Image (spheres, helix red, strand yellow):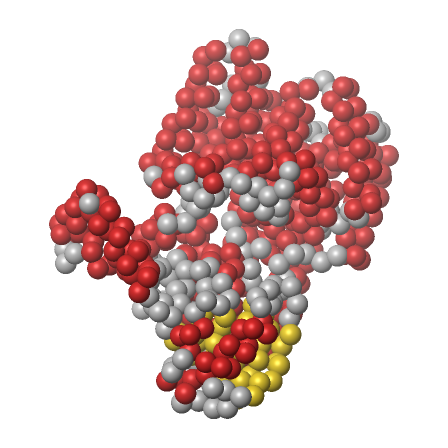
Length: 558
């Protein structure tokens, strides 16, 4: 029967792609519904493509730091620039004071629709500029790999801003993640669970949201799961690391590190667990090789992106800046609720579901012949969740997206460990996956659709020739409205403490009407009447009245 193995292999691959087709169609169905963006999503485009700054600045092309760099450090030639760098390293206070001076003397300026477009698009008259991407990320809190992908695809579609640019990247990594799910179950000799695991993950609102959310977390999910897969293979190979495994381990570790620093948490936990198992087997030489190799990869990662040292240990999002809101236990409960919401389980059911899942996994562990594999599967996921609960500034799905495929596999392995008859186990599994998926589509939608934002877009198209004044938080959050800024001919971005900028403004004075947009969580009535007073406009009409963190928009007339 040996001759049937190649045929069986091709059939399994065919079935995999047969399952993936409807999942991909569903992803396209929901991305078509996405109308707006989280500010971090717009940042993904801007930080990947904009040569002037990583944020769309209200005060000009650059923020104070970049303007100071342009004026004080960049010289007419490389030698002069290097000389200036060394000078200001010795006289950093002089440079810092100049940055503060620029900050204190800056004033908001009118921005054009072309400038807004240039922020989020790669320009056809420019070449690929990875040094710009690298520099922008060195000023952020994330490594550059995801942004390099975004810049590359954006360059292919130059002068185009489209939600499908990052969606295509995320979709590719989703497909590869599903392929790793298949491979993990193959290594664990549980091939029959593959279709159910793919559907449980791919049809979950959390899995769909991972593809829709235009950040690096789908890419992170792939590298986390691939890292687990490699280490399962190492364990199954009795900790004999072949050249191929070593190469895979090195590439995935490096690329995972350059994608998102949360990868390091998960990788470190797995490394510690495998090290303990290897030492228990007295594999001292293998342990040293395993640890030293990954340490070398980490050093290479730091050399490739030295800013990672500051970002991990000293930035406001790094270890030094951790100040999570609420108590640890409350945050942990909130994260568990986020995970169960990702599978559309109602709040009243998640306690029972968690208890059942824990019982299944415990029984499976007790009965299992190879407890090391189950430990490698469960313990890192649990510890990652416990650590993430401590260090993340917000309780949000994105920080635990990488656990969703692991939990999907784990839940099905728990059932498989209880029910030994494969036909019965497959029937029970199919029923559970069908019930969870159908319920999910019936009662919930993926996150990050922002479907109501189409009202803002339509309003902008109707009034694109009218000056647009935006009042909100102009340090960062304003970039979520870039799609509107790309439509209005002129936009003035103001903080609510900068309204006096409107006094005597020539653009406002030379017009008989303008649009005023105010973030709804601001004191909208006070801002509206202050603007009326400063501009000497006398009439206003409410155009849009968004709730939550949307914008309230008025048309002001003389």
